[in-house]
Length: 159
Image: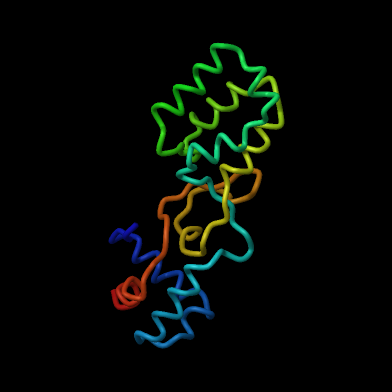
């Protein structure tokens, strides 16, 4: 995902505010190092909701006993999800998480497994733009997802 114009100003301010970043020269080599530091997981950990989980991974997280005990209505709901969201589900959407919570409301193993599956650790650059607390209990939502490039760093620093 490419940075938006306004996000370059945030990136520049963050580079200036952190000595591990601003101590690098404003050169291509310095930009490579800054990009590398942004593209690794944030320390301390910052938890975010995943934006895409393959449907097969969801299926592997469902407890067999709980799956077998689903009502016909909930089994149909689950089949509909698989049919319409065959590329995967977006657990960053609260309605998707609520849907699964409703389907598996009689059990606890599947909900626990899915809640673990829905989360991941953010990269430093992703955490910079994320919205929310970023704790494991209350993951943040991603605004920017992916890596930045040395060109992004140079553009931010020289703007």
